Image (cartoon, rainbow, N blue to C red):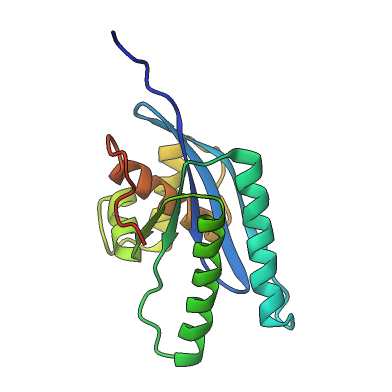
Amino acid sequence: MIVAPSPVRCLGVDPGSLACGWAVVERFGSRMSLVEAGVIRNPRGADFDQRALRIHERLTEAIAAHQPGFMAVESPFVEKNAATALKLGQIRGGILLTAALHGLPVGDYNPMQVKKAVSGYGWADKHQVGKMVMTLLNLKEELPSDAADAAAVAIGHLLASRGLSKAPGRA
């Protein structure tokens, strides 16, 4: 008996305390499409705990609305400023907690892995990655940069997890 493939959805997240990109990408067989994407923007003067809460709430809304089977999160690049690295780590922790609270397995990918998965080249610039996201998802217009990065993370996860029952790169 031949079983038809079922669609798989991944919520990709590009962490940031001021601008956190997210995108839900669906794969059906070899085709991928964008379900929805956005950027969670926090005011610069907002308390850090309120920024983290807002990100959690918006991601929870996206999970409830689109029912992804996985979450894929971009790991931070090496940050020279220790305070910035600590804050980004705290935001990532909140994002991982959001995934855990919703029972989502998490794929963890560094920027080079994401760029290579989407463009074939680990040193691709943001513009190249954005163009490839448009091509792979058959979009008519570019996504905002943070949302395009999140879509690239989701695409990378969906490509890496083809045929696997468990998320690779699990955090």
